Image (cartoon, rainbow, N blue to C red; front, top):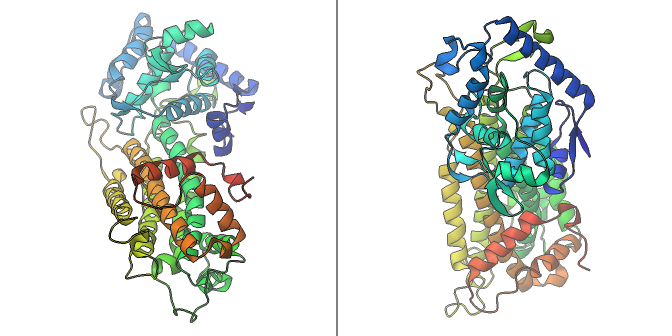
Length: 502
């Protein structure tokens, strides 16, 4: 059981909840704070104080006063009118993350919702009632209004959900689980949609996949080094300490670890004095990507525990302030950085693929073909990798430098953070496929060299890989191999990565 407080949620806990279905609950102390904040909202309504979002319109309508008898309709109209998302739905795991992150943010006690709102969000997490939320339509400031409105629709029984393998109305899913839709009271609609949980949820899933793929890229690169008789000296600790970047030092250390005992690596001067940059500079390039990923992780863990709606309620309602915590700029930057980090891991991987298949750059069979000329071998796999990295270059254009004013210029600067997060996820999928192609080629290369000469850890990974993709004995539909290896990498339990095959 993971206990949410609004302040302590970690990426590791998110991973357990989303991928291991670990149950989640709210801490009682946090729920007590939620109730105090709600009591403040009720007093504001009763005393007819004018407070944005409680008894006023929204955005450019913030100066329009709403009568007390219409406050409930105000929230319902808000959700219905803002549910303007379009396009394909977010992956189910992303929508589940949105539920979790929204509940955690509301638990901070600054939003003025009733405890029942949080209870219902956590019911949906625990019972796997997952909102169907279109991916497109958010500007990433004023929060992820459109995506989170589709989430809020499910709470009131008007949205659609993924439930037990079907797409059904949320009201029906609730009925089957013995729970009830909520009726939104003052401020609750605004509190549900005024936040960054769509971009953050997409970012969290993207980061978890990017982190794993980045780890895998290193052992795949190590096998490539063996396949190309790479020079191990370039990974000497002293070189990397001399520069001083922690992530570069750690990458070089992991490469040395994977290649310990290998008879396929060489020393400088034995075959050649220097390797090409795609081999020699693995610690520098991969290490720089790790620097960016570490930055992304830090920002995501802050945002996962942040109050991002508006207004925020402090001092038991004595201070209610309209601000801009919904603005997604910090996450927009982080997502753009993650795009670049992942794209570069794919870029350098594609260059290693070229060195594995190009007969002008190695002494392996041309294109790793079993019968060069009659059989094309891995020739077109390199084409596919080149296409993917080229597409990544387009997707890596920073979304955060764009802004289009909205709400009659009241909301005149926006982050486009959700676009950045979506594109980052697309790049990560492309990166993994490029890594899959590199692994397929590297497995062929080490077989040519002699797998008995491999390091213990790379050989273990080789054996696992061969359970997924067989040796190339003749041309076949390699698209199937690429997808099989990509799925294997995506679903791999990293902790067991280098254990011997049973």
